[in-house]
Amino acid sequence: EGHGGGPPAATIALGAVGAVALGAFTYVGLTAKGDLANLERAPCAASKTCDPADTDSVRARFLVADIALAAGVVALGAAAYLWIADGRARVQVTGGPAQVALTLSAPIP
Image 1 (tube, rainbow, N blue to C red):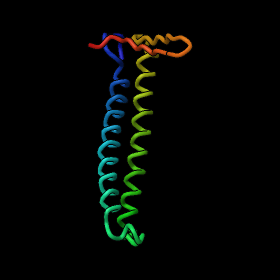
Image 2: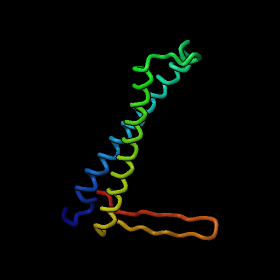
Image 3: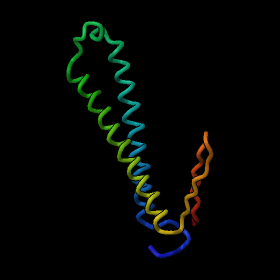
Image 4: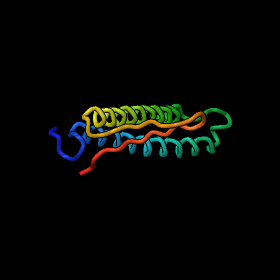
């Protein structure tokens, strides 16, 4: 973590973890949503007699997706913080009564 042109190694690692977590959120969430839609169309849905293993599986995957989303957001936030704290990135907040703008600028190798 010298003072080269790019972000510190920890920033890159956290950014990668965040990107993977957001990818997992997307994949797991979409597949769970598809399976939920299939369950809702199944004959057992109207009578609420679907197999608990099926409903528990969908519920568990939504929970995994939520956890992956939270982990991704935290990891990307930590990566941004480390990049800014390293001193090579700059954040500027501007705005008026009805609008706020956040600008992040940093060197990228």
